[in-house]
Image: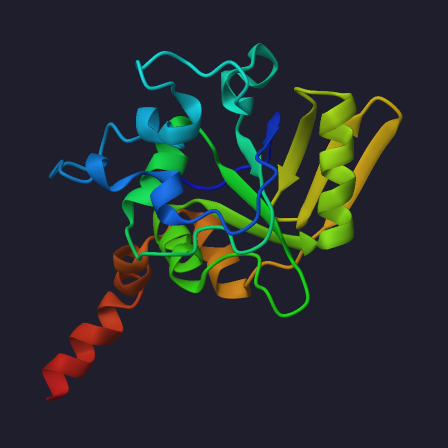
Length: 203
């Protein structure tokens, strides 16, 4: 897994709550036995018309958001099934970060989706509803606005025309360490290879 580095990228917003995994990648794309090629299927029911052509009204088909790396949505993103393909589709499209708000008792992300993101190196950031509202208002005025994501400092900085908007966030310390150091579950375990070998030798 690659180390997560501070970067500046275009922000794209899908202003919907409860976006489930079937909307992220519909079931007909799950037949492949490979873990590649899912980016083109991301939000396919919204991105494409019935004839397969681009839907010009969908945000990811607008020229301002071409190459977007930061996705903003509403609460309960990634609910539904446990398909890991949803994370692969988001990541393989080119997104490095997904931002969503916790609202009352509704989580920002479904638990299994969030867990799958962490295992694949896709950063999920939870902000408040008011903060996400501010980002969407900025996107409405400035489509294609850029933001800088700094996991080490735990900040998202939206570079709006009226001045930078700084949004602090709290990442799980264990996950933050894994992402900053590019450690998947296996690599993290192998850090203790000597201790494991010593334990096995004793038993």
